[in-house]
Amino acid sequence: MSLPSDLMYTESHEWVRLNDDGSVTVGITDYAQAQLGDLVFVESPEVDADVDAGDAVAVVESVKAASDIYAPLAGRISESNGALADAPELVNTSPYEDGWLFTMAPNDTSDVEELLSAESYEAFIAGDEEDED
Amino acid sequence: MTKQTPLNAAHRALNARMVDFAGWDMPVQYTSLIEEHLAVRRDCGMFDVSHMLAVDISGEQACDYLRVLLANDVARLKAPGKALYSCMLNDKGGVIDDLIVYFVEAQRYRVVVNAGTRDKDLAWMESQGSDFAVTITPRPELAIIAVQGPGARDKAHALLPAELAAAAEALPRFACAEAGDWFVGRTGYTGEDGYEVMLPGAQAAAFWQALLDAGVTPAGLGARDTLRLEAGMNLYGNDMDETITPLAAGLDWTVSLKDESRRFTGRAALEAIIDAGGPDEILVGLVLKDRGVLRAHMPVEAGGEVVGETTSGTFSPTLNRAIAFARIRRGSEGGLSVSVRGKSLPVKQVTPPFVKNGAATFLLR
Image (cartoon, rainbow over all chains, first blue to last red; front, side, top):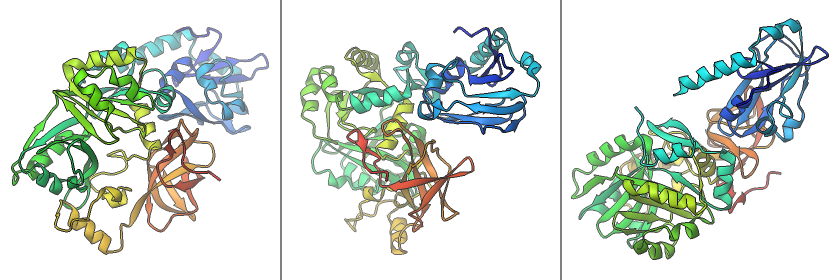
């Protein structure tokens, strides 16, 4: 597994990209999409909603199960990925690019630095897999 | 410690995702649930269902015994080589399990029961058998592989033992044949044509590998669940249990009341319900009109009032739409919606199956 090193991560398996304009793009990791299996529906977050870090803001559903997606940071939701309505499978096929879930304007961009680095997230999921066995 | 079927190593070699299902370490998915599902609908897939239990019932009174044990009437099987689907009921008419019974030969039947209920089923069958001249023999040493799909039989014939292949090829639907410890039923749980093959556990891995080499797609319990729901087939524990009668589970067609002298277990309770005007609740099929996914245990509403709940729900890979079974108050049909995370989403009520011959059985609008 190769984790993009320019992204930050959460223990709930979201990835976060800090964009040049200070906004962040959020999606779920390749590990998370593989665990969920074929995605068939994405309930997008409400645009313009003010959210706290850890709020459940969206839902992704595979054939087998529904999973909440949590806001990685406090801020305002600015955009959701409209392409996922017709093609939720983009989250499976392109989790870090075309399968992004939403963008948000963080209250404080420095909060991004508090998230997990690629290295820390990799160590975290290695522990996750050990728990499973 | 979870139990393993004789194919456990084969599943792991295929890198299957394994889950604990009723105490068994079983494959839920190999590559993609949707691909596995569509392989069965379009060509051919195979399932390890060795966690289910075959039980042989033999003896002079085998038929008499089964006519009391089961709500469907095995006397409808006029000649050996035929199969019947039935519920096994308790005294209150609740479903202890649903099963397939095969009439193998004179005075010998085989039933196949669910993995999650096998111990209680056996205990019940034994307790009900004490007044009959029957021998009840569980066959846990047999593996069961279901080969399902429009291309299933063609691929399987050449791989069966020579003495069984011709008999299998000649089998009508819902019929069975046997050769030694190998047994083939033209039955299944997907709505497709195909076989359920029972064979000695020690030979299961070789047969599985031969099917793989012939191009049969291994399919997990995930696809098995979506296939059976599309095909309108109930799942024990979800759609019915010991507190639910077949009348409230869409299974009235499996209850045979024709022979009034046949006093099967649960009959009096069912007759009391029918005499009182029918069951309070019925099982219906639902199709979600908009995007989303239906799951079990979602509230079903009519006119702003909760009238029942979904018992099974999924996203149908064939229809690209969510489908469900729901148990609702009788008389509340029409204008139904399902509450999904607090939002009322309109559904169309349909008569299962949802999918037949690979296509929808209904028009949505």
